Image (cartoon, rainbow, N blue to C red; front, side, top):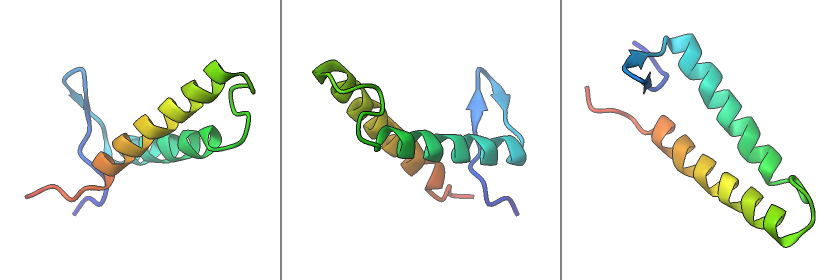
Length: 69
């Protein structure tokens, strides 16, 4: 039984290892965007890092949801 999300990109299904790698990459990127000054200290950089962090939260939520089987 697979514990990783079933992810399809452009019609191609990722392997369990690829899904795991994508989950880890998203989690890392989300953490990086949480660091002060991740993209710089100006207002635009702060808004962008906040937006990236929010989108990663949404994606990680989807990845961690249990799918009905």
